[in-house]
Amino acid sequence: MNNSLIIGQYVPGTSIVHRLDPRTKITIIFFYVFIVFFANNLPSYGILILFALASTFISRVPIRFIMKGLTPVWFLIIFTFILHLFVTKEGTVIFDFWIFKFYSGGVIQGIAISIRFFLLILVTSLLTLTTTPIEITDAIEDMLRPLNKVKFPVHELALMMSISLRFIPTLMQETDKISRAQASRGVDFRTGPVKERIKAIVPLLVPLFVSAFKRAEELAMAMEARGYQGGHGRSKLRELKIEKIDILVYFVFLAVITVLLLTRTYG
Image 1 (cartoon, rainbow, N blue to C red):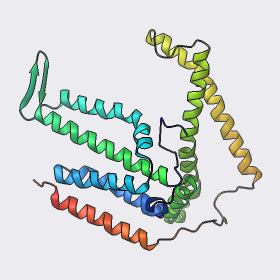
Image 2 (cartoon, helix red, strand yellow; image 1 turned 135 degrees about the vertical axis):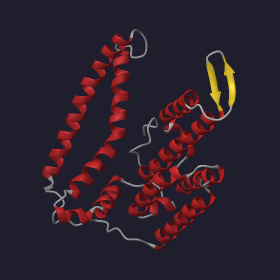
Image 3 (cartoon, helix red, strand yellow; image 1 turned 90 degrees about the vertical axis):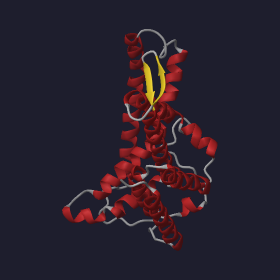
Image 4 (cartoon, rainbow, N blue to C red; image 1 turned 60 degrees about the vertical axis):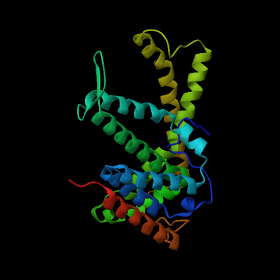
């Protein structure tokens, strides 16, 4: 398992989060993305952090695996925080040295945006970590079913999204394998002028694209050999069904939204 990126990876398990209906998880994550931007003080951020950490703990996905998988994201989070330090000029000056002048508003806003970014990545990653690509496909297709009335290709869209998520870790592994092979042949990706480093990427991109096209062709041939003709007339091996645990989770999330709206600062 490639631990450098957790998006698109699935960790088998029997936790409550794993057993939830995929439509429940997608719906909750969809609304969570919205309510994150309603938080504007410590209590409201606290309830969001508590919900995210509790969901992660209940999922029983190893914390070390999640944190290692989020390593590429830490750079963006830190960069976002530093950017707000230099850009935001609100509040009182808390640091003034030479050309550097940081304001309290920049620190507060940088921390707030960084927390939002981290929570969004963490919660959305739990979807793919606890849900198989097939379940995600079935859930998206079922939720978008009303669009079939206007001839929208719902099944094909859900299938493309599922395949995309499935092949993200595969392409990352392929990239790592090719880069190691090129490095063993003397190709240097990290040092030298920018122009030379860009040229060094070409031996990496060419075999990567060739491999991606080859995988796509093999997948298309396999689907054709099995008589795949789209979603029309297809039956499902596993029918989606809302259970009592899903209803309970909806009520818990509704309570989270209520507490957040009551604790946030207005005006």
